[in-house]
Image 1 (cartoon, one colour):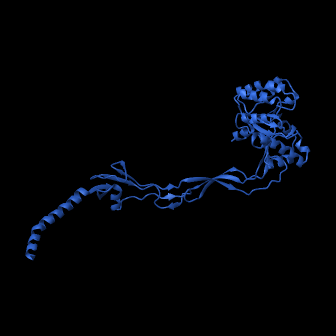
Image 2: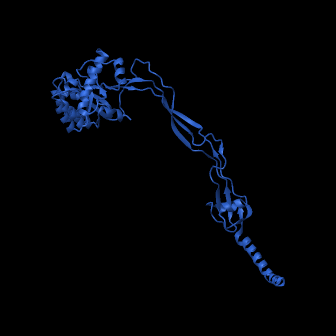
Image 3: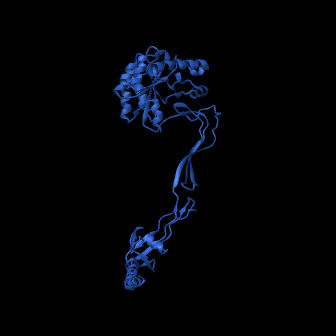
Length: 373
């Protein structure tokens, strides 16, 4: 048995050796091929992608580093990938090479981390001690104390701050007076209604597709709730003008509260919601009253175009007063009650047409405030 095995081994040994030598030659000639890498002669495995083949002979260049926003090292080898060229043409990481190819490699570049942004608050809330309005304008409202805001740019990974830009400064509680002149809009307002003239005003506004704000008196509204409903249905804003047209800076806090609450009760009964805008009769107001009213949730509307229609000037005079003084964010004072308003009604069509011809849009006071942003 042993003799037979040795005999067979002698017969196949030359064949096996020949196969091994042939395989080695094939491997060396067809698989392991000569190339030039950055000017040096190398032998690499042609069955691998160029990345793996160069790594196998320790010739794969390093990836770049990731730097923080200050340019300092944040993480090694997290930058851009190396670049490889085969015979002068950029190649992918899995590209295959051929015999005698000329390979050039460039290490990856360092890259800075991306920059992120956030809005951050700063400063402490400051209680108000002012007894004067902040600013000037037709509309008066309460602005609650708020911290400042700044835009912070920072490294996405390191969280290091690159820059800060102040957007707004901290501010205390304040009663502010503002005009809203950013957009080409006009707020028409009518006082002292509703009356026998109100429906005529509504019909004309509807014809010209115009919106308005109506400051109603409680004593006039209590028996004219249908007109309040008509105003609301047409998209107009209903606001408070007290119950009996009293001057708010000449009455007690209790009297002022009752006048406004009684009027709002009527408005809510007719429309389903309280009025949040108020116009003091005659514009009679002081800072103390303004502070109480705005602190209680009211926004106060004065005006910056006064038609003086309560004096009953000719319709042409009323019209000229509006059109000659028109500007962005105009708050126009007119009346649909409180006396004979024939001239106001007569002037209204020409006023509305003139406003439209000048390219202005009609808005309520709520819309006027929103239009500025």
